Amino acid sequence: MMHDDQVNIDIDIARHMIDDQFPQYRHEHITSVGSSGTVNAIFRIGSKSAARFPLRAMNPAECADMLRSEAAAMVEIGEHCLFATPRPIGLGEPGPRYPMPWALQTWIEGEVATPHGLSGSTMFALDLASLVASLRKADTRGRRFDGQGRGGHLPDHDDWMAVCFENSDGLLDVARLRDLWARLRELPAAGPVVMSHKDLIPANLLVQGERLVGVLDGGSFGPADPSLDLVVAWHLLDRERRAAFRSGLQVEDLLWKRGAAWAFQQAMGLVWYYRGTNPAMSALGRSTLARILDDPDI
Image (cartoon, rainbow, N blue to C red):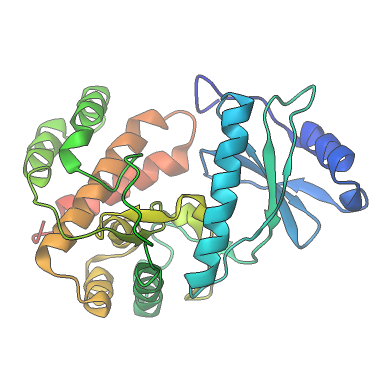
């Protein structure tokens, strides 16, 4: 279990609920999808669909509202993203063995990106720059950052970072990391919000060869700090390819450093929290922190 409040869901429960509520899929082969993801359990249905079951317990009505909001965001990001994104198909209802609503969406073919697999590919770096540029072009329609998670005011995360530093003692060079956060949190705001994926980690990107072919988990697409999606450079690229990514987007210094700050904030929560339950996510945190600490511009 990755979370104290994690809900049990396995292939048998998922298959029963899919067959019962969406009988058109009764003759499709259903398989569990191995993933380093931490929010949903994923089950593939045939070759064209997938079911996503939230892992953390929540009120069913609130969960349904969340899934409907995510579905609307998935439609919106699909209208602007240069790369394939899943489209919502429908919502499932709670059942006797799984107590919350869940979602059906289309399946996107591709291999899940890894922190080091294409870190030396300039072609991939430029694809990532094109992705971020395409999302920024979407109209915010007057919306503001909703205050949830990353993408707002850096110092708002001080309490969480204190928890992370305390729990990382013995795992990381906490003194050096505290000093870096003390500097990063003081960076001034970097301009008006833009539309952002908000979670461009390797697990949410699909590749074929050296090319980006798909973008997953777009349910949080919305207005945020224009530097937020720059975290992808720190999660996925080496120093030279980060420079290519930055040049492709023409990122100025303040925005670049704030991107590193958001990547730092995210990575600090991965190493200790998932150390025993999700080694891939914990390793992502370590590699991202190492890239930031090794960068003389940061």
